Image (cartoon, rainbow, N blue to C red; front, top):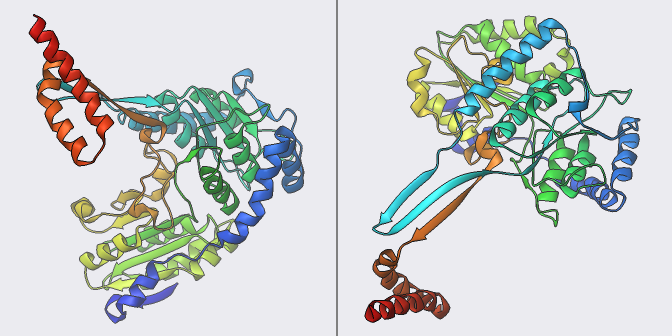
Length: 434
């Protein structure tokens, strides 16, 4: 890890440390556009073309209904999935919104109600390993929100088969379609719709730069879809003081480093943290990892920042706005109010980031690349929209109407004014007749 001391760095250097590696979307967009174009014209056949080109498979059928399949999992696997499912369900169910009703003035009633996004596409990466946790993180809030059409897209294995674990979860969330495809072709299929794939209104889920580019491009196209958030490589920032266990800190850093060589791994610690022991632990634990070559690349480009105080540490963390923030300091919960920008936070020595990745109940689909400054992670809110409703009584319009007329006149919108004036005149006339 590169090593820095906070007090020795200029403002310019500190700012540079918060920047992520630049993603060359210009060239990626150029590669993704032909994929979108072909699927626009060839539809199912277009998806299969790129399945064959990129993955060497042509799964038949391309889309299945998970409800039509019976799967049996290993007992321990099923128990682990069910435990995670219950916790994620419980936490997200508590997020369901209540109707809001306010009488802003006598006779003027305003309400806000939540309605589900009717058709959603859930992208579950599959590359080197299956990711049942991602399907739970996306599918459970979609089901709780009441989405009617839930399309799950995930790459099949080399035989063109979807893993039983994915089908098991897809059935539990009530998924209506399971698309055997990954990459930009899967995103395009869901955004545009094909013979087998229903067109969706929003696409959610993590993916590589091609998936991210496809989501961004289709969001700004005639497909008229929304996406959850922009995404970049996975990242973690750990804040540690003298009470932090160096072995725990090293394990948390490596749990993100093993995601990919471009994972962002940052350690911010006070001078009394045992950094030397942490370095040794990193080396020892790294050698035990099956993905040690990948993790080593990430660690080599990561950095350690020594700070004078925890105030300095949290100041830097808020500038960095990490996807995952782990706080291994004395009385960690007392620092919660200092956290302004972070995707998900893990307080104390017994809260590994892995808990949030899998089974504590919080969502692991989170903003990366500094987007935690303005984006939230996936939640129930990601699958609903809020509709406002107002109803005004005759008495309410008589009280509110003059203010509307005055403002409409000020903005020189005569038709707006007339929409009120005509009604006020009608009320006045009715009153005179009585």
